[in-house]
Amino acid sequence: MNYKLIEMQIHGDQRGKLVSLEGNKNIPFEIKRVYYIFDTLPDQDRGMHAHKNMEQIVIALDGACEFVLDDGKTREKVLLNRPDIGLYIGKNMWRVMKNFSYGCKLMVLASDYYNEKEYIRNYDEFLKSING
Ligand code: T46
Image 1: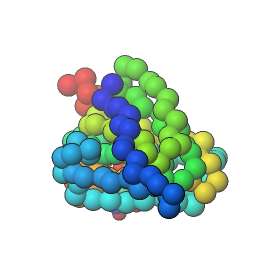
Image 2 (image 1 turned 120 degrees about the horizontal axis):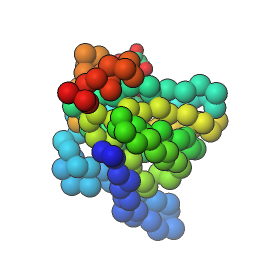
Image 3 (image 1 turned 30 degrees about the vertical axis):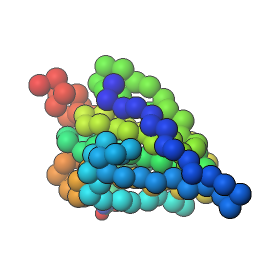
Image 4 (image 1 turned 45 degrees about the vertical axis):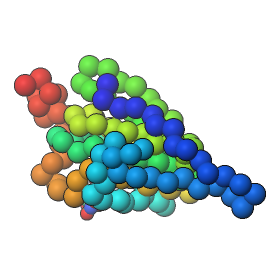
């Protein structure tokens, strides 16, 4: 499975907490794009696609959601609910995001610019692409 959880260092004191994200340091690629997702709803799933080459790190800045990750052979569920944990998702991983808490805010760092042609949004096509 081409994913992992990365624990970020927290710089905390009596004023609060701070986490720093640096490309090719604690983020394992050069960051070319940042986007964020908010105003989600518990009964509205997102994702349902894979990326041919894109790598991403997803951080739940506030609230929680589940990622169901699938490499075509195995399916695993990951709960994201800490702002100091990054979910790294490599290429060729089908993802479904579900069970969003109200007010969940996700920040995503991506290794490349947005390109719709780089998405696989059909599960059968995904299986075909990974099986050669
Ligand atoms: C992913 C998960 C975690 C843009 O115009 N630019 C962008 O950078 C992005 C990410 C999306 N869009 C447009 C494309 C769609 O018209 O925004 C709309 C919603 O995108 P999408 O349906 O792909 O959103 P999610 O939440 O299903 O998936 C997103 C990312 O697209 C995807 O790469 O891994 O978040």
